[in-house]
Length: 353
Image (cartoon, rainbow, N blue to C red):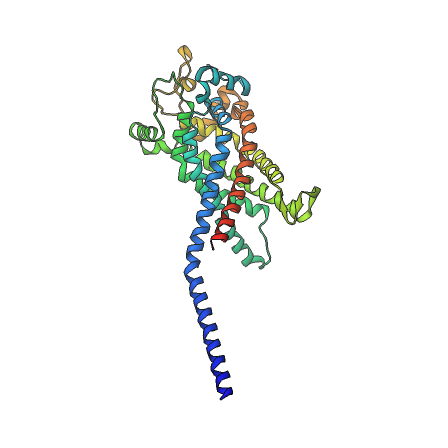
């Protein structure tokens, strides 16, 4: 009788354990898709916050850079970083320093979100293929990170390019411009109506070519520097396989400097091509009085050739100084904000679980 009771008890315990395991498996099976979606959302939110915060922090320098890139060489209004910022302040006030930043954030938030998310997914896919070829312990090399970063940059840039195109025009126009875009949507509809759908992608080709070294080198240099400092424990920057925020800022700054220097001439050509066909363009583009002339380029090569022939090779680096000043903190803030926000969201997710 006692043995029967023991058997019955063992059977009951076994049944309870089996039911618990089945419930756990069922619960995990239900949660797996939702966790994947949550992880994607976390990555997108972190990327969006990183992009918006980093661009707003350096908005005055971003606007000055674009003005220097596209201004008529025969009617100079902006002549250097300090003079240019003072001129904007004097003629347009504080709001002038942030003109176009709303559109820039509207563009950069989805752009940055897609870029960071695409980089993570591309890295996983490339690493999987690489491990299939070389072995399960293989890690991403700087060259593979460059490829993943380039893929992310092309996807993100292509998805949001029309907003970048009208942002350039909104940034350039001043209070004295003959025609005023009232905002991003008004600019999009006006360009679409007056110049056609293709106009929204003016300058896309140099953007694609430029984004490969720019974004690719950003991710490759940043991730490789981090790995090198952690693995080799150089200069005592790594503690418990983690880098401080200051060290990560420095890595991001180095990545930004390398990327923007290599790709900058293509950025100048992109901006100039975006101004082509702009009816009643801002005077900073066309010039004033007898110096007034429309911008005409038939393509990327033509834009390169005319720019160098009429203004010299140095014209391809117009605005480089304010861009260098802004790109280092901008890229550094973007990378660190992305990781910090992901960590914060990760902690919240674990708590809620």
